[in-house]
Image (cartoon, rainbow, N blue to C red; front, top):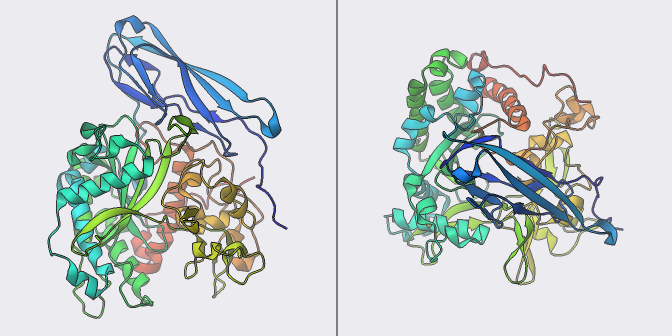
Length: 553
């Protein structure tokens, strides 16, 4: 007998005031009023009082404000947070008031504090001077173009032969914007709409690299390069995932040495440019421009990589795809008339540069979002935990529901989000907090709780994009070996509770507690991978902060 959603204790939704408290006359600022509800219940936020100099976009949950003299000395914004009552009870209504000092002079915005060298020069390279050179060399439209050129090696030889041999940079950029518009159902992103916001989104130069993130912690290590539409008031990101290994070269199966090649090659590049002597460089930490040149050199070497080995067609630079994430309306449920109903406005999607119908060109299009863990089991060698499709998604298993096997990626063991098309179950092309509530509260966690540390072994910690970015718990307890080793039994602890993560992708004004926790996790796993693939000297300057931390309670 199936069980209903696993209902957590009814906790109130959370809203997060801006990190700044003072604003100058004529200074343009923007901030989100989005609420997070861990129970995934319908939540609506309205701004019921604010200065006339401010505007509120309910679809994107964003306030934009340029204070006027009349707003001095203080300005107030009042939020009304509404939820339907449980079990037919009266709706729940709460209010919050945020007060800002309005000054004659414009005020500096807070800046996220400086972290350790391993974070700032290797794991989360995000300070502007460290990114100047790579921004000069890799504007967004060039990355879209080169990414499409390299992606052709995923196609069969027959399909590659159909390509015209040239790419239209403008058409590739336009297809990227169209995909974003589809994800968020927001015409401001659509270059074919009369509501298109050309200033914020239509100029490739208005998209800047805000982070370079060598993911040395993943089972398949890779580079992640994060662009942001810096002229948009809403947070809008496009993150490229890049490896020195083509994801798939026909025919299957993938050669078993591919992962070793990928990790040795990529980690070797990272060590060469960012970890001289096996440790973060004090020189690169202090000299941001020199570090920026090293970052650009790393990206350039990776993007140009080609082993030119006929026996290893997979050994080339490859942009796996783009993860897109923005607070532009995709997470907002609509009423039948199209007006705003509820949601936090965040949505996530994934893009790849597939061939057009005639096969002559490529365009960036939204694709099914790769799946997530619904249960786990020991690996074949018994050394780690791996994902397995839960019975509902496994044909022939007790409790299997016909049609849902289409969501199971058998070779990988995980399950896509359950969308529908023409009455059939298919993997979804978008994720948002208010979507797939039954799946997230029941099917996904019935056999593996969301804060079970074994999920940390999976990509995005084995949970959906939305779940990963609104979590209220950290990484697994390193003192409990069962979180990573089946020989130690099953975990006796859950992930430590922390303050709710408020959708942080790149820290600019502040650091979220989870972001630091996750970067410590990356250092731990990165150290192990460097030692495994390059030898102990490659990681002699790295530590594992979580291994030294007190166990979770």
